[in-house]
Length: 233
Image (cartoon, rainbow, N blue to C red; front, side):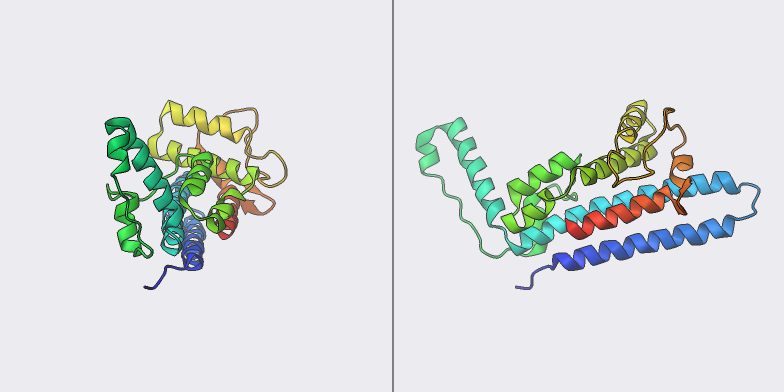
């Protein structure tokens, strides 16, 4: 049975991000000199960032499935343990002793999607802490260690980018407050330079994302950091 190569998943993500950033640059140049240039570029930065992080979320889902396709033993051991505990709690030791969980050595990636998420949605992780937790719970050590090896700087970047994505998508006061709180801490240390906000809250996220530092727009810095994280995850 052919296995999905996690390296191919990473390459596909890098290619998609590169296409998005090329689109951003091409469209920005087409807007030069237009009377609505500034506002349109702000809107372009917001919509491109939303697509960027959705692409990253899909990458994480595909990466987990690739890892599970390579080695499904840890997930099955965790599932068996949770099943046995549930049977014991609901029906007692007698029923638990007579319950069997038959493991499989090889499971196709298409079958994995229905096993890991029977509802048919992509795997989602609400924050970096949950990403690490699920990696330790589901993935064999060589793969879980890659996720767990990401730094605190990486975690802050992912959580902040996720919060920006939520604010762009929902425009709710709660999403805005969370985004601004994370923008205060994202640049601790030297790894996420230029991504923090100042003393004033960010109200127009497109303006924040299109701002240029050291020759790069913030959205380009985010895309480069997400690619960096993907290559190490």
